[in-house]
Length: 180
Image 1: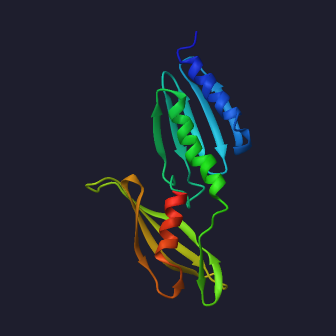
Image 2: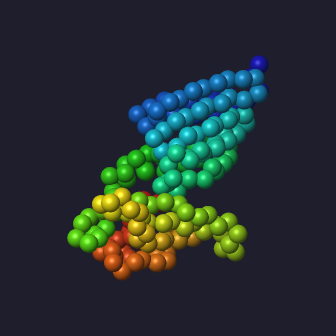
Image 3: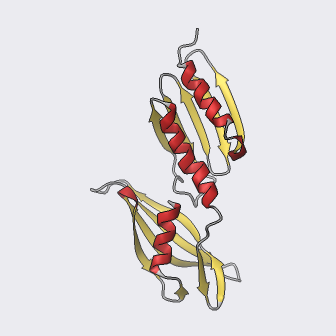
């Protein structure tokens, strides 16, 4: 006899199978105490264990330009919370991939790479995330364009932007508001 919530495991598996076009790999392992589901996507890896709750660990070390770069753990009593998480990380970010932040530098246009550079959990108002915006010039040299901070509730602040790059503060903040 299984000691985990079979309905919860089946609904989670059904939801993932319904989104196979976003998955690279799906593995399901059933044991007496728990059901484990391992999901690889282009964005991250989900390690899911189901007992009476859904526990999701996100491993995103392969994509350092994503807001979920550091491992994070989420707990849900129902499939609905997991669906929201999956949709926000995998489906919405996949749809927004075509949106690219670009900058003009010395007459040439370059794509900007966004890297999560720091997570400060020891803030009085909540966790602050800092993003570095970089480009690679024609010689392959990395150039620092700007830095953006994200405060709780999705509030973004442009910390610094170098004047030699042709990009406005509004372009950067609009990008972060729409992407993250």
